[in-house]
Amino acid sequence: MEYLFELEDVIVERNRVRILHLDSLRIPHGQNIAIYGPNGSGKSTLLKLWMRFFYPSAVEDSKGLIRILGKSDWNVWDLRSQIGFVSSEIDHHFTQGRSGRLCPKEAVLTGFESSELEIDPASVTPAGRDAADHWLEFFGIDPRSKKHLAWLSTGERRRVMLARALVFHPMALLLDEPTAGLDLLARESLLERLEAMTNHGIQVVLVTHHTEEIFSPINRVVILSRGSLFFDGEVAEAINSDRLSSLYGAPIQVECVRNRYLTHLA
Image (tube, rainbow, N blue to C red; front, side, top):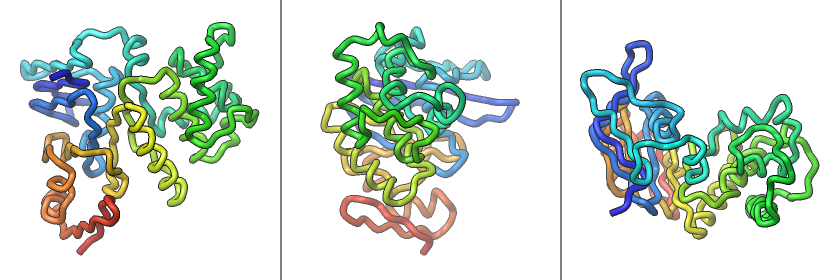
């Protein structure tokens, strides 16, 4: 079996505080999964390990083994051409300075060089420009718009960031709480587009602490708690009242409505 990510005996510590310790985790190529858990459970840290923003800590003789697409050694820029990444943190970078003055298409084209500043127009092929137009239109943004990113709503800018991550048609897309800061309608619109996006053959790894964001193409949930693996399995086995009540130490009621999981305190 081919794996997108493989992780073995990985520990991450910051200021002698352990924030993640996972013995083993494998994500097959092509499988859409959600990384779920309470705030502070290590979800974003795990994604940053996979994207090489973080590295395992050298403690307790841990192996600290991480393979991405079968390789443990990567040039970071080569990795960016294989796996897309979207987070509210990256989004924020495009609200200020020169980045905030880019128009949507200029911002999307920066994805070809993993830059946050405008790139040389001569370096972009006609196919690259067509891809930028395609993904902007897919997410409901006019490719001809000259509005600065800093002037866009959070929902509009998040959709531009998704187009930017997809412009080189990556093998997989890592989403770190992509609906953070969005209102109800903007969130639902974005989730619908993400669900449709999986039909283009792009694998999704979604980090969230909202069960209602786990959309139907996702068929596996990895639950983290206090930096450790709490559960790993099918969605219905992961997101149910007993499991979540145990996770949070409180009575949680789960209701499945139209393939979406709604939760509330019992």
